[in-house]
Length: 384
Ligand code: HEM
Image (tube, protein in one colour):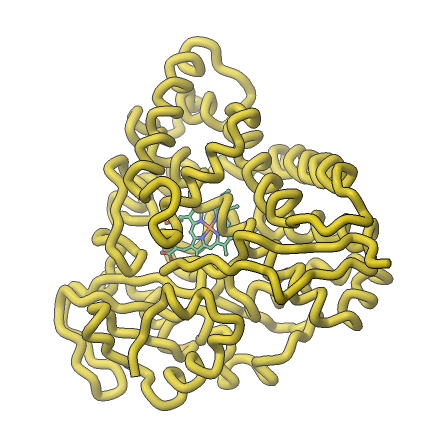
């Protein structure tokens, strides 16, 4: 048996392989990829909650990519604690309310532009532009550059068979863009997050110039493609489960729980890794120090030990302590924003087009080590 996260991300149904790993090889050593794969819910939790033994400083994607500017996602305590502590004001209730309003008006405008009779690409029409618009609004930077943002931010997350910019080119473009924005915000601060980070209130920790660039670049990467994939995966689940779509059409408040179930069942970040800081034994297997342990969230989220009827979509599932947003010190900083985007965008979509269809024969899945989603999602709003 071999394990290649990139090839598996492009398969419509990788779950039988994940089941096999979880049930029969709870610690699977992929010599070819240099990964020790853990896939049971409790084991993934154990790794996530022990940041001392399982470190992020060597990068969290299987290739070990680490950005040149400091980003909290690839830092360990105490530096991680400092970086995360300095941005706790990112999602204040006031900013969340304003962003929710922005999500709704932007979604409506994007849906207005869809030709309801034609076959369109929903990636291009909704799932890609919406998250980019939200993050650029949060940062207060140019939405007019969104095509480039999504191309370059996406490049860091997925290597699409040698097409488009490389991860290094992507991140350098983002740094360059931010380097141009910062001096202007330093001089003329606005009501946006970049200005706030550059001009903290008294008593708040001050980030260095490089730390602000690193944080904004991280938001552009971690906050865009992840949500794009979450939305695409959820639309497909709604297509495949018409009774759930009908139920949520009648009771839209059900989206509050349903979005977590979409994230559990089709996790947009199927796995991330850590590097061991000492020898560790798991299930009788000795994992030596300095080895990359890959946590398969997508398998853990379908572990029957944690989720009864784990392969079934249950929109009201409660409790639903899935790991799609990770856990512990690196728990997704943008989880509340991502949930709001999903809740609002999906609600608007099925209100407007309750009978939409996607076309599985022609969709194109991303090939990626760390993302599961679509780069082309053919969609008909009102099938004849
Ligand atoms: C459905 C969409 C999203 C998913 C599935 C997701 C998933 C994740 C995961 C799995 C991690 C943990 C990384 C780790 O443990 O190593 C993470 C971290 C992070 N996410 Fe998200 N994310 C989403 C949306 C967002 C959004 C919208 C933002 C920003 C507005 C964001 C910002 C971050 C940041 C800054 C971190 C780093 C936290 C830290 O290292 O302390 N994410 N996300």
